[in-house]
Length: 110
Image (cartoon, rainbow, N blue to C red; front, side, top):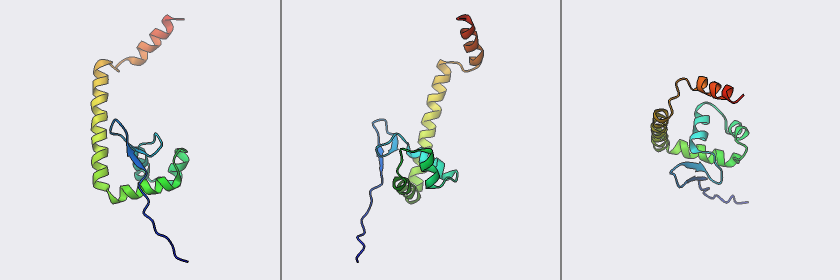
């Protein structure tokens, strides 16, 4: 019996906003790589994110392991963008005292 060896495409796609997701799911590359770097096994990642196929998780981790520098650069850029959005949001909506303001608003309508 001869084993047919075929290359499996990495199941990742970039959406319209430039976010890399595991194909046909809403799970981001960031999510899978971060869980892996925190010590989760592919099986544990699959338990946490049931929309992921275990074979896809292995392929995504394999992609990460072969392209660490590019993935780390992508993750750093995503963190930078996230920090900018958080800063802009905090400038528009001051988070200091938010709990007190919300409780006061809740009590106002009682």
